[in-house]
Image (cartoon, rainbow, N blue to C red; front, side):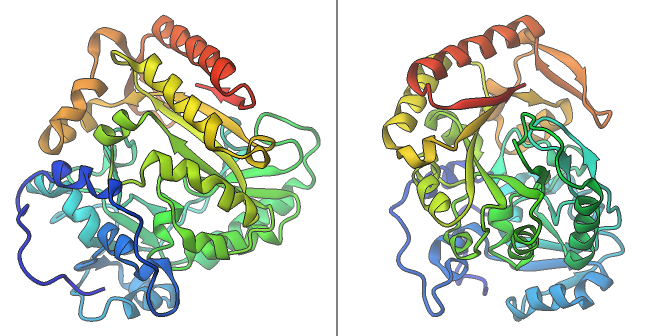
Length: 394
């Protein structure tokens, strides 16, 4: 992708106001040339890569070469490691360009840690992901908490090693002995914990390779959550071995917090297409943000979901309910590019400190507040979308 011509009127400014609107535009025109959505105008609004940082081994790899071939004339900066790039993650001035960096910067790395860890909530296992970071800019995202002042996509180019690790792990499990909340028959592997596989697919074939690998694993399913509708995924023939979880929240919350994502109504409308293409389709009601009017707005969302989702989707759908967890470091970063989001995300009077599974210190709603909210949301689901089975609420 080539840089667009002319200057950008939003240079140097937090861009959330300019970006609230693009997700509400009319559907993109039919894709050009080979029919791929990744070259469409909508995709170019999401990603217009103008600089690449890469580890030498990542740049030289077959996947790295595939990516760079699609980015002719884009300047490349070699870096010793993808995790800490002083001019990017360590530069406090980057925060004012938070969303611009997400659109224009790509990092290529080699994933060194190939470990699969137990989960038991959304999935049986968390697999080593093929990316870290995202071109979208959800204000509550936990991924940038350790990075500093920028969080563009980092794509890992050693996809063959990642897939080989997952295949060995799946085969070592054997058949699933009994149903659980993750799935009745299959071991479920979350393959997109720290990124969005639908957006990754705009850049390279990592997502396609993962879906193809699980198609050949009869005892396991891949699973990933997404806030971006990428029609290219409809052509990947998942064979029922990949679960897509469309993340949903009331549209007013999404306008404020889900920056640069597909509109919530578009995510809901895509469910039937993805089911018909061979995916299992679930929903993430996430994050649930408690603020004045939240119950009314969630009732409206659930009513809309019930009205437009066809029966074939309802018959196999399930949901996860996840209340907001926040973080003081992320709070400080957000104040630099999107302070309006913190008006609803940062609520010290209703939040308490918690230590996450990875040892980080975060804040969540005080226990009794959270329990009441989960109970109320269960009532709303039972009233407005009674077909929607809740796999877990957290």
